[in-house]
Image (tube, rainbow, N blue to C red; front, side, top):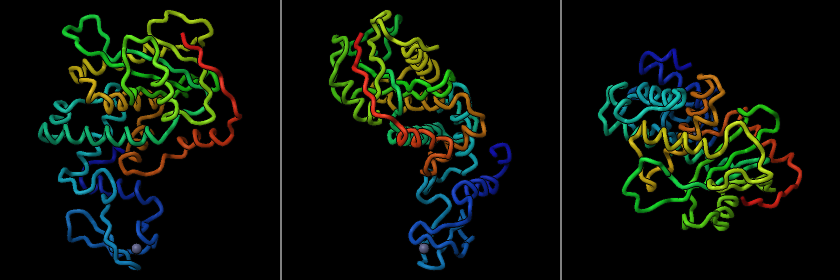
Length: 301
Ligand SMILES: [Zn+2]
């Protein structure tokens, strides 16, 4: 779909198609007929039943934006499909906007990703690890360290691409000298895991190889290292205070890595339009209903 965007008109047409695939629906009264007022910059639909005016962008991430939509779509496509995303300096050059605008576009996309991730709990068997944010051998002048939690679903089949990960700062203070903070892990579980909780293992980064931990192709801590390395290369490092949305962006790309560019773009567009997840993402919800009650005790390394 993205390849067909050559003008602002194309971008509006694509947005319309994604937002109202079966035609206009009034957000207030669900009526399907409207007058199209074309006098404004973007077409506005006036509901024939309740007269509410709805622009193609209202209620979406693009509402009231002054940046042309085709530039937004270009940014979304790049964030969704490039292997490493894009930083504000690169995006500003790519779509010919100021650094400030590019920075704001990326921040909004990231926040949308964070919100979408927050309402999608991990389902099924989950393994969890606790690490220190940006533990780096060459890093100097480190006064404060921040604990971080990474969790991953274990694929039901041998297909590792079905994994879904989250990397989050605990929402309660954690002393990084403690090997594993149970309160932080419990808080993470109640916020990000689906009940019944099926926690297979809890690991702390120092534990070399705790007994009973399942072997997966890529260890949780290798993934966090990859995330930190991306943050330092693409964004010159981000302090813990501002890093959460960046980590969510990293996880978004990780979680959808095996999908086609078209699907990745569709998923991120859906997130930016604040629309419900696409059918293939609903598989996770279907699993919730079919889960058998099961609970594995925490096997803290
Ligand atoms: Zn209406």
